[in-house]
Length: 309
View 1 (spheres, rainbow, N blue to C red):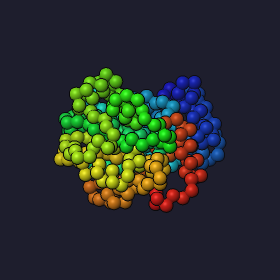
View 2 (cartoon, helix red, strand yellow):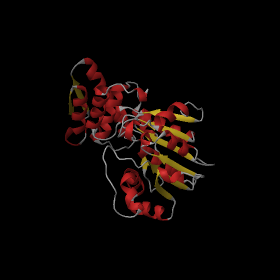
View 3 (cartoon, rainbow, N blue to C red):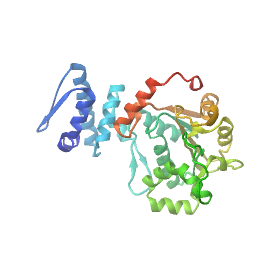
View 4 (cartoon, rainbow, N blue to C red):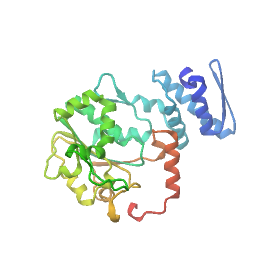
């Protein structure tokens, strides 16, 4: 009950705000009042969270907010089954849980296919989960190295010539990949693996001419590749390798209205039997709850984009 209610009833307040209901707790009983449909949704969230808590999982406010959005989008979702599925990162006892049905489908796709596209808005865990799967595969000796890359494209800004050597010039573009890696493996361990070449972080332009064998390759921000770059990347995949391509087709920063290589690849390669495409939406956002509302607001306000069809 303490897990479901939260400190000072914070979890109940999140549920109440999400569904427009009033929740109270006395002893081991939670009371819910409001409109019938909203009460039903709130009750289902409380019931599902109690099942998750019984597994020993420590609930956070973000978990409660995510549960509310999942139940609203899919009343038949089974949260306990969702949290029972996890990824062993290979660092101590660290495990990562999918926090939506689509995140779970994404993990299953990566386990069972050599090429997976994760497409959707920011904050849906596309890169983070791919990184967790890559580390797990590395520590189980399924691959010999991890290669992380992304196109060096500025998000609507002209940064000019950055100071420093080559690594210092490209590091700002690759920082999101470093952040996910350091969070999962720890800074010191990440540094050691990169020093040994077990983990390589590089701009997409450095991939030309290479064959990436026995590797787990992640291409991040793939919406900012050109069709030529995307074809070049996909044809680098060697024997014993897996690749995950992530991106958000609503945030294309290519100059001059160039066509996105990710949009092209989804139409050309995404239909192949050996390839899986997982589409995320605002219900999968695992950042601040406001991010989900922001994603929905932009989607409803955006004009139709023929290049995204």
